[in-house]
Length: 114
Image (cartoon, rainbow, N blue to C red; front, side, top):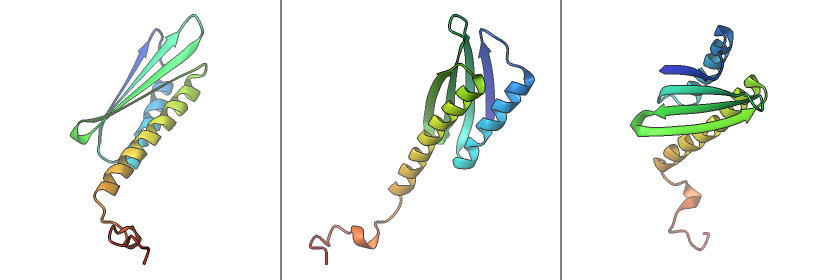
């Protein structure tokens, strides 16, 4: 899986880039079909806010996007990762539920409940 980290209007230290890389690689534990992750960090000078965008590509052309703004870079990374985890978990649930057979109590024929 490819991980690309880009900084705009500022420089990200090697330690910060490694921290972000370690965090985003945890997404692969949730859903193994991820193909690439792009992280863009933009520092807005006038209000000293970090804007972090996360683009995740998965097999079969499914792309996920999340972004977050915060005054602390590491907090912004954590917040955007929480959003992305929610999106990926919902998608994973949806495709898993789609392939399952109905449970015994979910049958359409049992309208009377018995």
